Amino acid sequence: MQQKLRGCRASKNREEVLKVLEHQSCPVTAEEIYNLVKEEIPTVSLSTIYRIIEKLISLEIVNKATTLDDNRARYELVRETHKHYMICTKCRKMIPIDCCPIEEFENKVAVETGFNITGHKFELYGECKACAEKSKKA
Image (cartoon, rainbow, N blue to C red):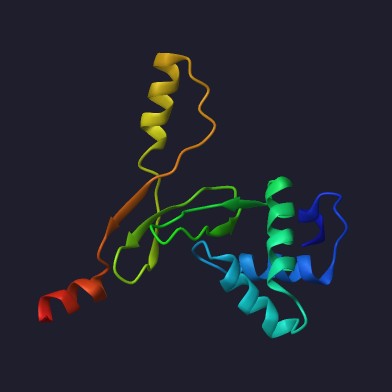
């Protein structure tokens, strides 16, 4: 984990934040990170978690990810392959999509326009299976 910090001083708090993020399959809020880190380091504060997240973003170790209509930013580790998500508008569950449906289109547009595309986001919104079943029963 320390090699991920790229010259930044390692601390127990930073390492714990990285450990928490490594075990997440979907982006999480700072509050969710805080609650998980607090289990291991009871004295950590939410403001410390925010400072660590901002530092990890500046080091390009963490991405500020999806912001749902609840206006809460979510964070995830930068990985070799990026992810896209289906997001339930009822329960806010995020389900990763295994492929990137945009890459081919992105490459085509870049070639045609000469535009240097540096990234993209793709999200699908709707109801997860559990919420759809609850809706049918109601």
